[in-house]
Image (cartoon, rainbow, N blue to C red):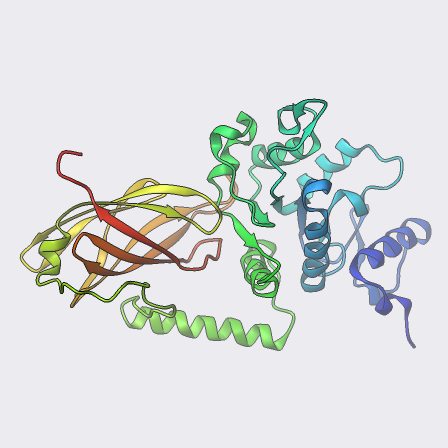
Amino acid sequence: MITACGLLNGRFRRKVASALGREHGRIPECCGIHWRGGAWSNGVSGVFLSYRREDSAGFAGRLADRLEAEFGVGSVFRDVDDILPGEDFQVAIDSQLRNVEVVLVLIGPHWLAARINDMRRLDDPGDFVRLEVASALAAGKPVIPVLVSGAAMPREESLPSSLASLARRQAVVLSDGGWQGDIARLVEALRPLLGAQAKSGGQSRRLLLAGAVAALAAAMGGWLIVGRRPTAPELTEPVADVRATLTGRWSATVKYDWGAVHDEIFEFKHQGQTLLGTASYLGAPRAIEQVSVDGEWLRFATRSLETLGSDSPQKEVVHRYTARVAPGAIFFTLESGGGYSIHPPVEFVAHRVAAGS
């Protein structure tokens, strides 16, 4: 028997299922949804999408369909599809926020500056996007900013006080050109938060491969560099003594993949053949470890903790730096892993800070 459910996309299947369920008390099992506690559920905890329609509605629709294809019908809540006619918008939003496991805040180029009646919308206490995000943060939900259409992460000082902590959350970037890869990374980041298993053998194989790579990296002392070495010009003046050259204070302006920009400081000193020091990440100095010097190449790691909300456990993030040392400059590649977010490598150049500066 061919059922209609198999012919419908995620959003329409959810509407049909909801209507059938409320009217008849049951729906075909092919829809993958079951009645639970007064609402239809597919057995997977939900994702809440917060967005401005005029800013990122197209991305929200594509993202919702992709996540429902991965985690099941009914696993994503967004206001356009999920609030019934006549239902109180704010009551529905508050109810959904209480029941979801993670909140994705879609931020496009107009999210921060959108205005109505000569007022920035975020400055209106009744703005629904502000209410959604503030409620999620106050409830301690994992909140992930998702940057689309080339948007940059808002600075803390540009946000209302109730949203200020959003600026300190690690963000994910979704781009048109890299859509499939970006979505795949987001799905893998969401999987442990939603407690969902991979749906396909291909995904299971990728997870097994990732585990094998991580195990191999650990066996090699953590220095399995999958990415490329830093892009640096050919050295016309070879560095005779890298440790002596590194000794001192260095500064670099680093733009991270989620749009945040920080002036990072690196301080090194050597004791014989041992290199010691600190490297700041997001402005906070962190002790370097696992230091390796090979010719003009320098490698080291630092650690930080990442959390998505007051109810989520802290996860350790390991930041691995690979650098080529030149007179007056250090060409870095930074790779971070192990937290809730997945980020591509970041390249930047550090320059020596003059003594007394």
